[in-house]
Image (cartoon, rainbow, N blue to C red; front, top):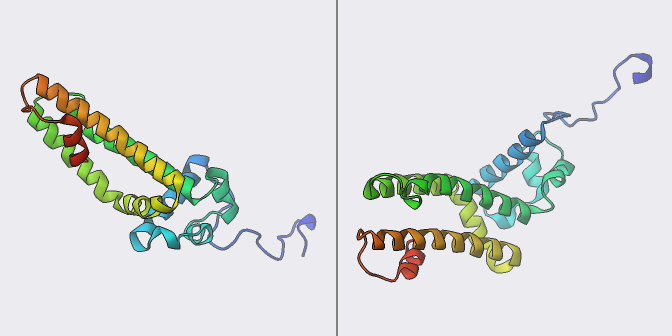
Length: 175
């Protein structure tokens, strides 16, 4: 049977369970969701593009439309986590409302974000010593957090809410 005579082809070129078209945002999200599911079960060193994409409705080549490699995927996940953590920490970092209540709210949100994305943190920390890009991404991520916390500690010291201490050392210890 041929498609040119109005009949269906003898085979479906789309693998079972796979769809032909996805909105770019949906496809990217499907890939990142599959990565998170994988990392909840197995270490990053076992992740391959083939294994990852087998857990999606996308083809393996689709991965490369969104990420050049697995390490870029991990950097992207870390960037998404940082956005979520900043949103959660904003009440305290921005000095909104009563200081202790803002700190509690922020800590609760940051801890919850870290729990949900814990496997990504583990994967990056495990891979960073062997991967310069991930090591740099992790160091920059932590550096930005240390800076934000240090700035808030200093602001609260000026306001008399935190006793004198080395704000940078405390920020690094807390992070």
